[in-house]
Image (cartoon, rainbow, N blue to C red):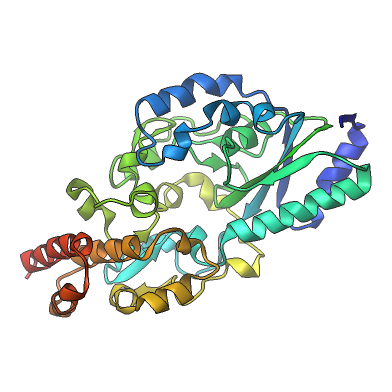
Length: 353
């Protein structure tokens, strides 16, 4: 079913989304021709690493109408997630005995919240315009969401590849509704990165190999979340106390001076993960970990990757004989995969004694 809607009705559809709590609504068509060469080149260079799903269904990713037949418009939404922590999160990176968890993962899993709200949004649109074909997405399926959001005027892709908004920075989630409604589209916004290279310069592992190009295999977010093998030795020290993700490129971005705080209660930190000690995290049993990660984004990685990341962070912490004792006393209960990282961490600690 295909409908061409009047401009006033398109604006009414946007208002529905804003009333549901999204901070911005943008609409685009399905043409992503300008991204074909860059994306296929990125895959050919193996910059996606172990994320094999990025190399699957490339045609559907680059052509939304192949993904969902009859799609004419993509409704893109922005939902802010930055919380008020009092201290700037970057300061936490200087406290090596504490764990750093990427700020998007401190609270409830955004996938659940976004998917539910997008479904509510689509339902309300249907109530207003009548029967329509649609499907909702949030960081799921082969969707080139940042490219779509940029084309819909939500922001521009910065040199770190994240989407940036001039008045709201980059601390936000994206979601999409593919629909067969023929809607008026928004215009992309101008790129305001200019000559700034702050994100490139700050990256601990030099993962931004060129402006707008990220080699995921070097990225700490990838290494701690998507990478399931042993962490390459050359990146372990640079990981510091980051046990889940990395926000450095966002923390240093000048545009995030304008970021707005989220009003979503579900994004508030759970289980003290905003300022929790590494040793406390390491001391959680598997049952504890499963309970504390239930309903949270950090559930995305398994228990072994969780332990691996904490062990590396303990190795990077300031010298503490208690850390060495803890690692040594727990050694026998772990498998060879974790032991290999424990061996490295103990060696790092002993080297600082």
